[in-house]
Image (cartoon, rainbow, N blue to C red):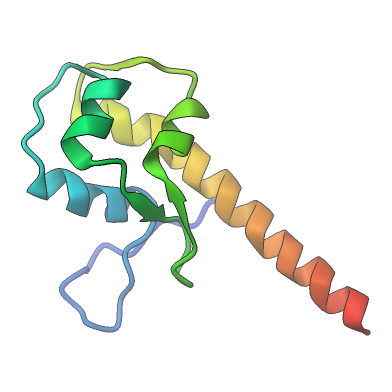
Length: 105
């Protein structure tokens, strides 16, 4: 089951990750759609985007490469394409942690 990032980012206890974290970068950028991946990266300066609540991050360029998309018609289309990439990364990182803990036993 997919874990959605927190919606209330005004709460100091919440940590934005995945598309919520990317949304914060998009809110500060001067970017209009439609836009290609290169334009998105230039406008956002290829930030590292947290993909889990622990703050683990991946470069936006890496995430965009994993979408196999080159053009996005809207911000929503961009976020929709990137959500499964961040989710897959979050799931694989948590599985890796469980395996490391098991190996210590």
